Length: 230
Image (cartoon, rainbow, N blue to C red):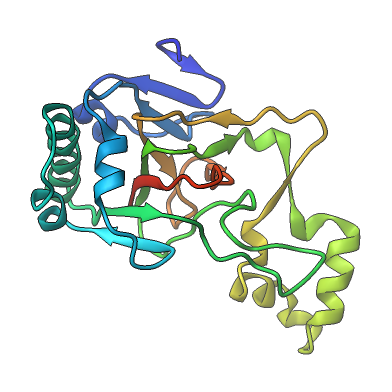
């Protein structure tokens, strides 16, 4: 990724710039561009998957018997957890086989494989880094349509809603239907890449920019992902 700004993305090269730079104008994603040293595949191979999503603690990492390259990777993981925790975030390092899929309705999906935005009642940001495996995508806001505004989907949601008409919009929010988006024809997703630490804008009171539309990738067969999120 080139330095500077690309579409809605600002690129930085230090953690300090990542957390201290504010979203403004069209910028709703900030990337700490980096290529961290170490063997993350070794880390993944020596961790034990307990569920489809297994949280990995610093203690889990410290218990691993690693090569020199594995130790370099572990140092980055521990440092990222430390930096974000000291910043005031609550980072979670996950070993991931797959997320749960939403199969309840055939006309709309609300799982993380669907393009979506995050919402919070307080001012916050989403931080995300994929160290190993497939990486997430973001989508420029002008290249997506809110699913609830697609006429056929909206009509089916109205049929699903059993309350009063004046409560329909609240119903859409309560079940998170309003957070999900369809890419427009010829939309061009932007892959977040492996090793980069991202800050994505969230829908919250006081947010001055559009929330960043993103999705989890389909995992490669027989390959786990190692990612940090908060």
